[in-house]
Image 1: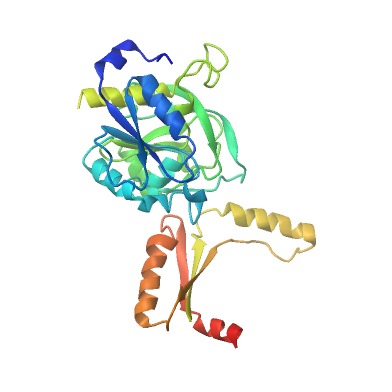
Image 2: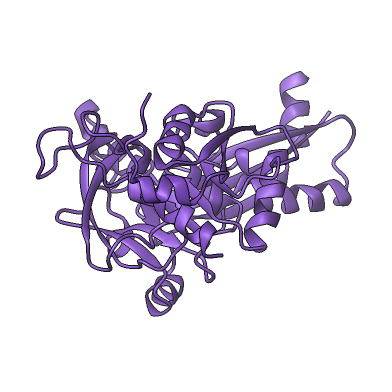
Length: 246
Length: 90
C-alpha cells in the first residue's frame, strides 16, 4: 500500500515508532496503526497486559468499548499493566493521544481532567463532525492553524464531556481546550469541548476519530469531494514533527 | 457470609440522561405520580467471614477509588448488609 503522507514528513522522521495499545474490546486499533503508517512512521502493536511500551516514541489509545464499558467507560482499562507505563511515560513528556474510548481511559487514569457521561440525547451518534482547532501548539496539533475548521468522524454513546466549573475555567484559562465542536453541540459536552490537553501539551484526548480521516476515498466529505477528507492525518504528522523537534 | 452494599449515584449537578429516559417512560404505563428519576448503581461486595470495621473501611476506599468516579458520581452509602444475607438464607 502506498503512503499518501507528505514526503518531507515521511522521510524526515524515518525510524519514529508509535505504539497503539489494544485492550479487550478495543475496535479501532488497526485503523490507528494504519494512520500511523500513512503518516510515515512505524506502528507498533502494544498489548494491554504487557508492562513494557517497547521503546516507542509516542502512544495512541484507540477507540472502542474496552471491557464492554463495564463499571464506567475506561474504568477497568485504566488498571491494565500497559497503562502504568503510559502514565509514567506521559509524565516524562512522551506524546500520548486518546481517541474516544482512549480519551475516557486517560480521564480515568487522571492524565486528563473531567469525565464523559452518556450523550444528553441518549442516542448513539455517528456523523462527520466539524470542530475548531483552539490549540495548535500540542504534540498532536502543531501542524494545524489555531482557528482552523476540520472535519473528522464522531461515533459514540458516552461522549458528553463534563467537569466542574472550576476545572472548565482552568482549562479555558490555560488554553488547554484543544478542540471545540462547530455548529450544533452533538452530545451536550460542557462549553462545546471536543478535546483537551494536559499542562505540558503532550497528552491530548478527544472524542472524534482522526484515524478514520487519513486517506482520500475513505474519509469524510470535504471541499475536494465526497470521502476526500484527510484532516485526521495531521494529528499523526504533527506528532512526528514534535518528535523531530523534541 | 458477610456482605457490604455500596450505593453510587450521579452527582446532582450532572444531568442523568438515563433517569430522564426512565421518567419519560413511566407515564406510558400509567405511572403519572413520579416527576423525576435518577438512576444509580448498587454494588454487593461478598466476604467469606464477618464484616469487620477494617473490611468496611476497605469497602469505603474501594467505593471512592474504583466503584465511583468523583468527577461525576457520589458514594451515597457503604453499609454492612450481612443481616439481609442471613434473612434470605434462614
